[in-house]
Image 1 (cartoon, rainbow, N blue to C red):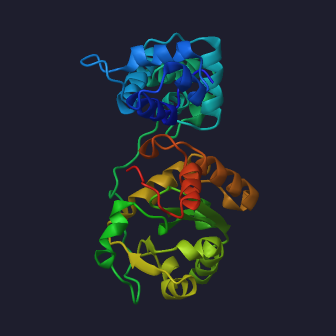
Image 2: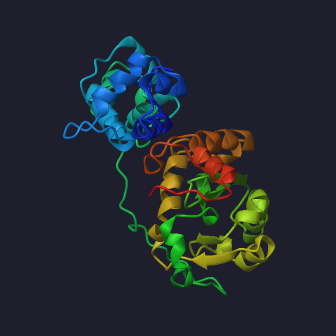
Length: 326
């Protein structure tokens, strides 16, 4: 392995502090001794020649960012970018993941320019961008004119720690509506990890929504904390949902759908695959599941370009003791 990992850099720092010989260090880290000397010379503090793992990581990341900024758009990079776009990663996600994985890439602006050049030449790469050049209304522009749900508990009563996005099991729920209001997609996301659950349902009937919600969340039941929705009548069975899943159910304030910001954003990602006007009677649950897998494997900037699946697995491996990155 040519590159030093984060763990190896911190271990190198400790070994140097213990005055371990360079030869022994090369054995400990499974690196050629010349690589050890090169790493120390390149990434030590210029002021006192002391090697610190944290500083070495910062220096390495800075060099890699400069390399990306000045990188030529080679055929290998074009292949990497095109494959990533086809997987529906945004230019920012492509560059972020390249930095994380130490893969040669160009800057975000260069990717956008490449996509639009491709479009002018009748290419289709632009169709994999989330907005495809369209503009959208600001959050909160659409007013919710529905009456309040009976027995609702407002978001002002929700525990403050939910806002911190530091634990798994605080959920947001919504519907994506199909053409002519026939059929819908039930979307449920975890606020901390961004993990998505989604199911095709035949209508907005509250009984159907209740049953689908309980079915979707059964596997997550041991970890569930809270769930938040808007005031749509489709969520009228909230008390039955809360009782079955042993979860606390809250509602956003009227006209404030942006209080479920993570879910609103996620529904925008779902619309990338099922645009407004889509006839949901023509799609299958299998197609919906494929989209769920795509979105759960898409790297997220707030998780240092780890995907929701990767963050979720880290939770499971650490018994939920995971330091989330907001």
